[in-house]
Amino acid sequence: MRIVEKVLYGLGGLVALMLFFIALCHYNPDLAKKIGGVLQANASENPNISLSVAGTTAADSVIDKTFTVGEFPAAVHTDLTQESVTTNEQTQAYATDEPEVELTIPSNVAGLSGYIPIKATGTEITDTKADEIASTLSKGKTGENLTFDTQMYPYYGIIDETQKALYRQIYANANAQIKNFLPVENVTANDLKNAFTSVVNDHPELFWVDTAYRYKYTPKGKVADITLVFNITANDLEASKTAFESATKQIIDETYGYYTDYEKERIAHDALIAKVKYDANAPMNQSAYSALVYGRTVCAGYARAFQYVLHQLDIPCYYVTGYAGQNHAWNIVKLDSYYNVDSTWDDTNPNTYDYFNCSDEDYASDHVRTDLSIYLPACNGNRYSGLEVKPSDKPPVNNNTDTNPPGTTPTPSVPPTTTTPPSTTPPSGSTTTPPTTQTDGITVVTVRGGGDAEYIDNIEDYYVTCFASMIDKDSSTIHFDLIVTDKKLWDQIYKSYAKGECQEGYIDRYLVEKHKNACSMRVEAVPRTDGSYLLRHSAIIN
Image 1 (tube, one colour):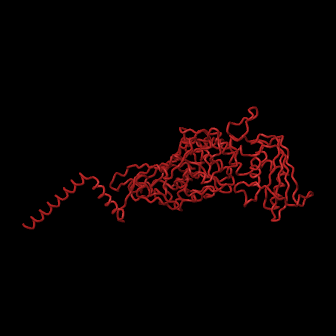
Image 2 (cartoon, one colour; image 1 turned 45 degrees about the horizontal axis):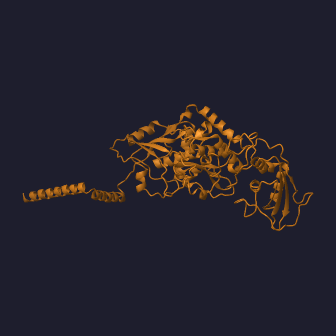
Image 3 (cartoon, helix red, strand yellow; image 1 turned 30 degrees about the vertical axis):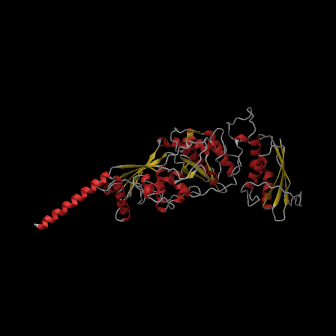
């Protein structure tokens, strides 16, 4: 009996201590929070205890944000066990967090954003239900034989092999309009997020695929099925594709007759912003279709439309997501190097080139990349930066002859009929021998990054540099000197004048920009001791 009494007294004392502790926590909440924090920390260190989070805010507090290529924060699942209600649905928008760096957004473009992050809706199911789905649902199109050039489709090159297989499957099923399918491999929600994001970022032509999807997953995180979301254009996809391609061709047609990728890019940029109006309420405004067919969109539509048009011109152009005061989208274009282009922010009144072919340094104060876009190439190009004539720099427009919209650069459909063909001095070895003496006091006009050091090393850079050398001058006679690397390039330039290609390469553009009628160009080639050639240019402008 004494032992029983001692046990009862002990239990009574333990109960009293527990009641005292509960009362203490009730009247001292801070103490309860501290104790809870210690317990959570101990749990996270215990490999037998798993913690799951239900959103990016919670995830940010427990997940290291230093990611390697192809990784995102852990898959977002609700904190459910197998005994919990398994039909609970967790919707997650992969939001672009506001960066820690302070940005300065110019007032004239503030609010011209509208990119909506990808939205994923995940539903947890039991393993039994997952087995039932696997026995009745197919994988649809696996896309196993598809290949993607990472020069044109960079996001495909960013993700890992498992995600690449899922990328191919999503792309193939989207093209076949198959909405619901089993994943081609065992994948997590994180794999699915990376693969889906990469597909929609690489392929603006899939305009009928919304930037949203649904999926089911097991308690262990395995994705059981995938459901794509299609917009209204999928109801009559062939008609929608016809309208989409027709609208694209209208812009492509304006680039005909232009020689370089830079010229085509600039004309496409101008034609797009002349065609499109920023409208936050535009339907399907995350798609290229909204811009090209409806002519109303937000930044996502501008960027996807520009990407698609340049793809048709065989110019690599990437879709970039990030932050610019708000969630925002723009492009990266590859010419000789990589450049940022934000056609949304250039579509102002008047239109500008303020955000055209800019470096990352140029964008540092108002654009920050996020999500998978941080793995796209750095933009350090400058050869094709700052070459455009801004509307405010142009002479007054003759309203009787100019039918182009205000703020746009006119583009000729045929060369001006009054243009005088340029005359040139033949290269060394022909009937007329150019001067062989080198003149002191050479004035060399250099475009940023144009060739190696002061030398022009290809004919496209020659056209660009000639245009840049003439555009800022308003006199009736223009003189400038350039240095090209060797006789082979000079011979190519000489032949291009003889065939009229230089007129198409830069003279026509100069005449249009300056509203002039004719240009007579004389070029003399002077050999130099290092094998390069000094080209002396004399132009008479009418």
